[in-house]
Length: 473
View (cartoon, helix red, strand yellow):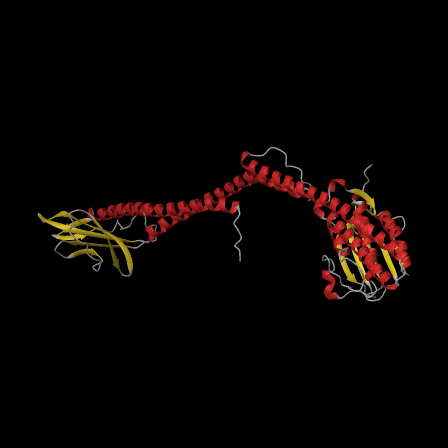
């Protein structure tokens, strides 16, 4: 399986979005480290200030140390009522004055305040410890103070900062992506305009693309114009080849048929006449095949110039087709009926010669193949009808029909469902090409009561639709 290539828009978004995302993640990680450090330093300073306030509350009574806690409570500005405070005050080398005896000691010596992490009563704490001198009964002693605070407030504050920062970055990212999409849209606008102009063109419009365009896409436009010029030359060569083939093949085949007819009139020997009759049949088949091949080549949709299409009334085309085929139809003891609603317009946009070929091919196809292995002796019905915004041409017979398994193959070149009848196998292939060139829909089906039915739905001209304003209005 081939991997579907990514669009240029997706690649640009990836090149813009991925570095931005990487930088945003790096910025978040750096911000988290810096904010955590700054928050910890701020909380440590407040914790130390809270611990030093205890220093001023120690006093002596009859030589014993006491602490005044009536008008003082140990707290920090950052706890916001969410943390827990533990403390311990004791005389160095002596008894504890107040606090929690199980609170762990600080590591190392306390020449200066020391911050450390400690666990107590299932809490993860940040603690500060320091010592200060104290006069007791004219004796100098050292007092050790440890104040510890749980880390919930630090975590909550850091998380709030990071959440706010992440939200701002997310908004900035969305804004950047929006601006990138707008920039990409406006950058691709000239390409989209060229693509829209090409999509609105007829498949046969091979004129160069004109108009101002940014320098970046001018080489692309030049390449497209060169390609269309080569295609136009190829089509012109094909059309010229068709004309040459038409002249070079039809003339000798016609001469061969005429010579065969003269020989048949001059010869009386049965064997010779049988051979000449077979030659005449082969020449007629070759002539018919050449004509069908030329029609097939000329009806290719890419050879049809939409600018030369004209408004036509299918009624007139159908009447002309009936006139051309009526003699052959009646000679085979068949009937040809044309049905249409009186006073109804059946106008379509098309090429009159191609549409005539289409109708004649459908009538002749029904005449030759409707009976299957035996000659057909029934009626061939030609009808025009309006179905919504479409003009539907129907050609049907009351013959044997075709196998349901072969319906989808009837428009293949040189495929013949009935090998017992003469033909080139190109009739319905030509019909399909002409229908495609006129943006019509071809539908092949067996009739419920027996026989075969071909329906071609053409887009109706706007002027011919009911209640549509005319060009003069």
